[in-house]
Structure formats: C-alpha cells, structure tokens
Image 1 (cartoon, rainbow, N blue to C red):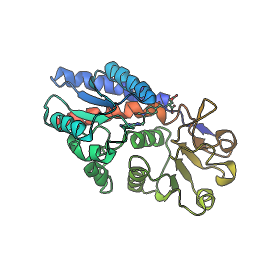
Image 2: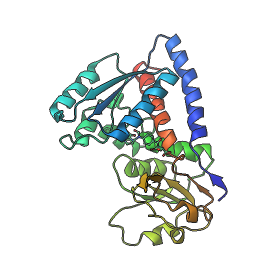
Image 3: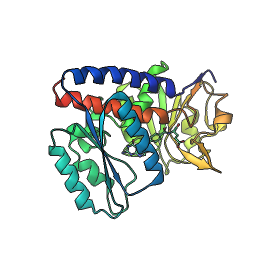
Length: 282
Ligand SMILES: Nc1nc2c(c(=O)[nH]1)N[C@@H](CN(C=O)c1ccc(C(=O)N[C@@H](CCC(=O)O)C(=O)O)cc1)CN2
C-alpha cells in the first residue's frame, strides 16, 4: 500500500477554512444556523449528534437541537419540518437517521425544503446531481470526494465499482463520479459475480455494512479502495474491506475507523454554510 487515505487531516483543514469563512459571514451580519433533529434515543445517534454539536460550536455555526420522543408520529414531525422551512432564522435542517419505524425517511426527505436540505437527501437535490449540480450533496458523498481530491486521485476513465445502492450514498455517489468522467458500475445484493467486477476495478467503494465483504482475491494490484462500511465484530469497528489482506495490494486505501467517517460531520458543516450563503445571496 502506498497511501493511507486518512480523513482526519482533510477534516481539520475543512474545519479551519470554515471557521474563517463563518467569521467573515458573521462580520457581515449573517449567522449560519443549522437545525438538527433527533427522533428517539438511538445510542449511536446520540454520539454522532454530540460530535455535530461540538463541531458546529467550534466553527461558529449556531446549532439548534430539537429532540422528539420515539413515539412521535410522522405527521407531527413533518409539521415541525414545515414550520422550520418557513423560519427565516433557520438556514439548514437535518434529521438524524435512523428514525423510528413509524416514520418513513423518504417522507422526511420530501418535506425538507431543498434550499434548507443540509443532508442533501431531498429528491430535488438528489436529482440535480444527475444534471451535474454538485454543491448540495450528501455528507458521505462529499467526504469521499474530499478524500479523492485531497489525495490527488484522478477519476477520469477509471473503472469504478460502487458496492451498495442506497439512496443516500451509492446512487448519489454514482452520479457525482460520472460527473468526474469515471466509468461507474453499481453492484448490490443481487449482483451475480461481484469478484469479476471488482477484479477489473481501478477504484472500489463499498458501503454495504458487511465485514470481510471485499477480500484480497477480489482486488487487482494497484487499486484504490474506499471503505464506507461500519461494522462491529467482537466490539471492534471495521469496514466492509478485509483491510489487512487488501491493503498490501492497494495503491491507496481508507482505514476504518479514521477514513471517510471523520469527514462526515465536517462535510455537513460545509454544506450548512453553502446553504446559508445561497439563502443570503452570497
Ligand atoms: N441524517 C443523517 N443521518 C446519518 C448520517 C448522515 O450523514 N445524515 N450518517 C450516519 C451517522 N453519522 C453522521 O450522522 C456519522 C457516522 C460516522 C462517523 C464517524 O466519525 N465514524 C468514525 C468511527 C466512529 C466510531 O467509533 O463509532 C470512523 O469511521 O472513523 C461520523 C458521523 C448515519 N446517520
């Protein structure tokens, strides 16, 4: 392995730049405000929300946290989102996932106003990615692009296999990488011979949530491997890629933890500032 694609250094750089940018906005009387909604009491979400709160404070974003009990109805949540859509003091809105089963995440994505869509999950913003718009994009996708740019990975003409077809990572990532002239294939649970695809890939990006999914015999020498998976095995956090055996073959590979993950929250803050600028005509 030639390069370890660690996320902390580019995340710190984003944080530094955002701090300066927000200071300038505040000097002009603009106070970026992000509303973060939690429904229920998912323990992992609590940790991510704390990280979001702390980073917002660090860079100078005004974070408004709202907590709803786990039995909140979809109608009640959507009603609150509609109110926030109309609130001129709120620049960005996001609802932490997962939400309780009585709430359909798609209804949330469809209700958040596209111009306040901090997660970049609204159908309009997701659709615009296929037209080449890439200023409002899901945080994980932005994080992957940040790694690609920071480490100077050229995507044009690269055979790129994305494993996972989620609406919030796999599909938008395909749109954005097509925009970078990559040759993109999306593989998923019904894909017949995953190894044949991955063995021919210059870049493999996995977001499935299955430990040891990508093994050494599935990867060609010199491939770039980006692992978005987060799995716990005997208490240990690991990605979808068998890091120890795949890393020696790879030209570049993300660690898990420490790769895409640390960039996710910084990417959300970046997006909150982009939304703020747009709403204030900057
Ligand atoms: N509305 C949203 N909900 C969720 C999102 C999202 O982008 N929007 N993503 C995840 C959770 N998440 C942020 O919300 C998140 C996930 C992982 C990390 C991270 O730093 N991971 C570390 C490991 C952390 C650990 O030890 O558990 C890493 O990979 O190195 C940050 C944020 C689901 N919900």
